[in-house]
Structure formats: structure tokens, C-alpha cells
Picture 1 (tube, rainbow, N blue to C red):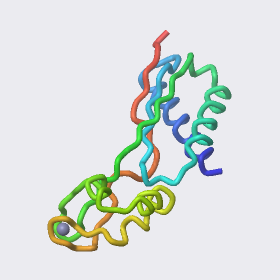
Picture 2: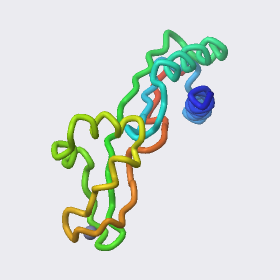
Picture 3: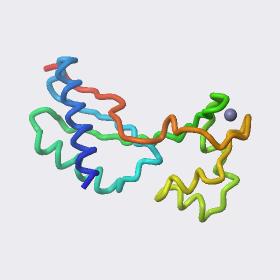
Length: 138
Ligand SMILES: [Zn+2]
């Protein structure tokens, strides 16, 4: 069910943003979806469509674009940041596959490329957020 909660958060944020910008009908929504966010994209998309229908006064032939946000990591020791993509090549196919379902697996062998510390945090690539909206003012 958390796809529905996330979709609802996105739609409500979009409607609030529209109100602030004095947009009467939203026509485009861009959503950023972190690649580590464990979500069923099909259900998420379906939930967005259903919610748009539910709040249809706020939308007009809306196009929803989902962008995948790539994972960025930051070392807690030297503060170096790097994209997780650059490390994927060194993983086996099975490991790459596992990342999508259990992100934590991916990080077991991960070290900071600069100082080799295993102590780092995920800076980008988690969560769902509203990137932008477009719409008409009358
Ligand atoms: Zn480091």
C-alpha cells in the first residue's frame, strides 16, 4: 500500500504548488523517484492516475513523467561524494539485480573510492519527490 501513500503525497504537493503559483489546472507533473526506493512502479503509476481522476478539477489532460534519481553516496570520513553508477560495472549481474530489490546488499562491498572508508551515507537516490509542475492559469 505504500505506493498509494507516496502517490498521494506527490499529488497533494502538486496541488499545493499549483495553488501557490495560481495555476488553475495542472497539465504536467514530473516526479523524481530514487532508484533505491523500493516501489512497484506499475502500482505507483496506477495510483497517480487514480488520484488525478479523483481530484480532476485540478488537472487537465495531465502528463506524468517519472524520472529516476541516480544514487549518490557521501563518505562520512572524508566527505567525498560519488555516484553509485560508477561502481555498478564492478558488480556481477546477480548483484546488480539484487540492488533493485534489496539496496542494502549493494553496499556491503562498497568503500569510499578516495579514502577506502566503509562508512558512508546515501545522499541521493532514496525517496520520491515532486520535481516540477506545469499548468494553465485560467
Ligand atoms: Zn572517504
